[in-house]
View (cartoon, rainbow, N blue to C red):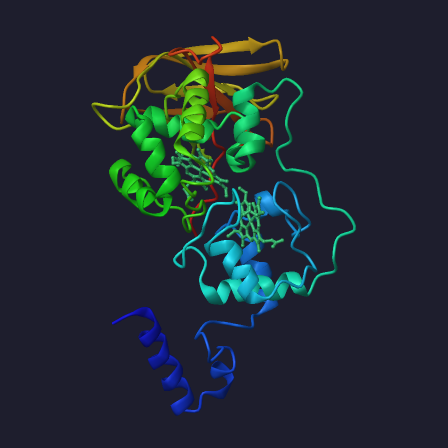
Length: 351
Ligand code: HEC
Ligand code: HEC
């Protein structure tokens, strides 16, 4: 049974049972949505489930990709651009954005006024950009979502000791490769898969090789993550739990060595006690003129996890503004600098 006959049956079903309101949303000729809900389109565009706005602007005002606001594109034109893009834009599947959602987005943009002038790029080309950076920011546009240093994919490359075949899969067959990768790393999937599938003709393998070289020159990163829990009030202060973890794949991922963890103390707050190995005490951070609690860890291999607690005196009301960083001496990045990640602030507690 092919797709057309399936749609034929559903349209016939709607008509036969006289569901007029729903039936009117489908064009009889093609069996796909031809009119949309502008409010639903706006919600989808602005929400976390799609990243289209990184290339087209938060209000469709245009950026790396053309402006969409007030352009009066038909649903068919809009759908063609999304499913079979004309140029370098990646293609999005029906699982990512359905035909009805495409109609909703078209209705949203057609309800907006045209822009007098398209907006600026989200990630502009920096004056000091190398050829590799220009390639990903401007020629192909990966950098519009991943930043000029494509730092996220370099972390995931470090998590599995990736090779070029790995990159190819994520670029040309992104929508099938991504769920497999999340399963492999036992990670929680995102709301939806937000990157599309690139065309092998628009982005030929030779160009992708250059992107790969750029990622290698910058260096793969150790996928270290650090998270602070919300403070728990104790008899002598407020206790926070800090976890630092290497999210890589055992037997494959990179190991970080000579790791320094620092947590900046809110002014007026003192360390009452700590648990966990490697605590070095409080040091003065002259750059930020603040006191930091410091831990040292010799190494963190894939799936290694360290847990610490720190109890701070109540003094200083802004304890939940705690911030800090994890930095390691090895491996260094391609330019010889240390890699570092921020400690994520407490997540709002469930309930
Ligand atoms: C990497 C940047 C990028 C992303 C992400 C992106 N686009 Fe595009 N889009 C472009 C570019 C560039 C064009 C111009 C034609 C081309 O390259 O295919 C375009 C063209 C379009 C057009 C046709 C505009 C016209 O003038 O005819 C539509 C509609 C569109 N995109 C919608 C979307 C939607 C919806 C999404 C998210 C599901 C999306 N785009 C994600 C870059 C992007
Ligand atoms: C529309 C924004 C967008 C664009 C453009 C984009 N990506 Fe992605 N990419 C993502 C997001 C978001 C993810 C996480 C999975 C998902 O939601 O699709 C991802 C995942 C990846 C991954 C898998 C590993 C990881 O870090 O999760 C690689 C590799 C990758 N992107 C490389 C690229 C390259 C190379 C390009 C350009 C050819 C590119 N991306 C363009 C948004 C984008």
